[in-house]
Structure formats: C-alpha cells, structure tokens
Image (cartoon, rainbow, N blue to C red; front, side, top):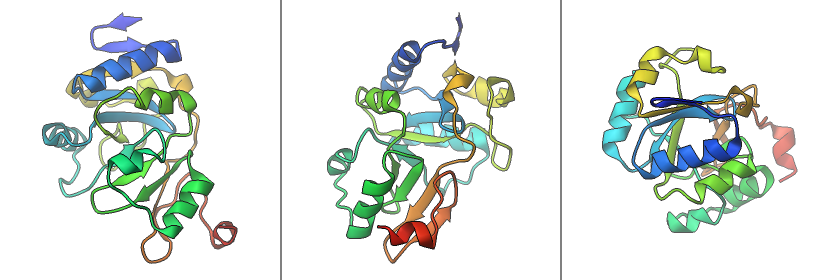
Length: 196
C-alpha cells in the first residue's frame, strides 16, 4: 500500500524495487534493516550526511557505517584488508559485524541475501544509520519511528517483518589487535577469537 512517500511494503521484491529506485535517485530512505528501522543514503553525498546529522541530532564529526554486497566490493574502494581483517571477514561476513577499515570506511556485508542482491543494483555506496534521535531507543516497529524523522526523509518503507535481530551490529577495529567499538549481536570474546 502506498501513501505519498510512505510505502507499506508487503513483499521483499516491492521493498527492494523501492529501495533501489530511491537510493539511485539520491534520496534519504527510512526502512527496516537487521535490528531496527534505519536511514540509508549515498555515503559520499555531504548534503545528505548533513540532513541525517540534523534529523538525528548527531555530531557532525562522527563517521557513518556503509553496507556492501560482498567482500569483492572492497577492491572498488581501494581497501586492502590486513590479515586479522581477512580472518574476521571470513568468519563473520555476511553477518551483523561491521569492520572499521579506516577513519573513512566502516563496512559490513548484510546477512540477508535479498539485501546483498539489492545492494548490487545501487550505484552509490550505501551509508546507513539507525532511524532514531541520538540517545533515543531503536525503532523496532513502524509505529516507533519518530515523526520528525518521517517528515525529514524522502521515502519511508514500512515492513516490521524484515527486522530480525535483537541487538545492533557489532563494530570492531582490527589494526592493532581486536578493538571492540560497539558490542552488538555478534559476540566477540577471547574464546571466539581464538578459533580464528
């Protein structure tokens, strides 16, 4: 069902089609992803980043996460992973783990195959952030989304069934050992990393 910029998507195919169209048109898209509703945008578009910062009340100096369809995408970004990064990618991708490769790039490969396939059809690198004001709870249902965020984005895709995880993704930096920037859905412990 469609209502202006708000689309209640019943199928993954419809969701995927709307997501591709909006992102390829340079729009801010609010949508379900992994553990909550999120906002996606062209990672390199500074105007969109500023809009997201204003909507969320987020500090301008904070970097954003981007999602890629596969490890092969790293080559396009001129990222040469170190040995530990390659080990983590092999063990944890695709899944709810993001790796901070540099000050610019913190990347993850989504667990859902349909989303990875969708990302292959989007021209810009897709930046992503949770659809909530800084400090507020995650929006787990369409009814939880802040009305100001809905007004401030270009397209809203609603489908609560696409949210499956309890926690946000885990974020790690792997330059000088294992640095956990945010512990999330993927549990990183001394025991789990010994198997690498």
